[in-house]
Length: 468
Image 1: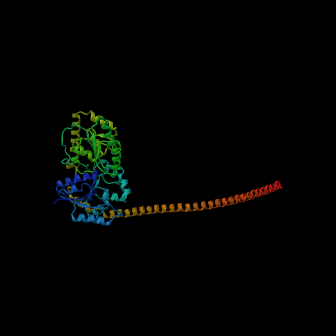
Image 2 (image 1 turned 30 degrees about the vertical axis):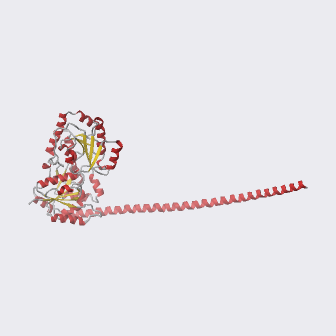
């Protein structure tokens, strides 16, 4: 009987993790597994439907109002309905639903570590309403933990203090049946392709790619660059391209990268697309998340692979160094780079040799049934305590804000009252001064009027005397 596995991923949209999962799913299908995918819809959903032995089940993993039990029950129903033998959990966004479901149904699960960015757990602990103890329980009760890099494994072990034997290093790999070279020699290197999500979490990589193209075009006037990807930074990028008059075209998000990549000679990016381009025998430039890292060469590929081709750990260089290197290379030197990079990748990153299969399902089931429920209950109570403390802290913060706000307005009211009293006093003083001025003016006016009247009387007397 074919084994049934459940792949859990929050979304099958754009991204390296999503593409890696899709590659694994295809390989499991080739090995006659019955694959069930529990995920949100995305750009790869339609392609899943074209694979034999794959059932897609749409699911929203977000818990909007605390832990939503109906979502846990839904996953349990999926596990029972399809008689799932093993669950693969690829993202921490999935664990609030899937981890409890696996425990309650006694189903073994594999925990994946796709994280390439240091301190990623801080973000999850701060944004997913989960605690350190909950995450530790999740990792401790996994049948195996698979990390795509040594750094990801080391960080997890250090943070959660888990025995070394539970971890397996399996790098994200390439389907060489899909990503294969369509030519052996390239005479022109004027058509460039940049692949990336256009989001802020890509760091300076997007701008590094633009900077390289600008530098490259100064020496190769016929050069043009297309960009595959989409995201929140798209409009900003479009404006820059328009303002600077760059020969760059945005192609949007695509799920047929291998078909597109065939038409280009130089590919820029980070992570998975670097491997895909090497598999297709293209010159590949790692744009990096922080600094620009340059061309992948045979003497650099091993160090680049240690961080899943993200560029972390590689020295930052100037774009001009790569431009000069490409312009100075002979055809023979170019072919050496393309072929040796390809040979290394085929040997070390072929999906056929880098996929996890449980050889003894009885052992996995035995492990799942041996999980110490008392220990989990302790973790649960600790989790409730942590949530209560967090709740109390949040309440205190809200109360402090309320009090500080009230104090502000009370003090403001007192200040306003005091100011009004002062203004009233000023007004009364001004009234008194005004009255005094009026009296003075009245007194002065009377004197002036009396003087005028007297002058008129004197004038009349004088006129009468003249007549007499």
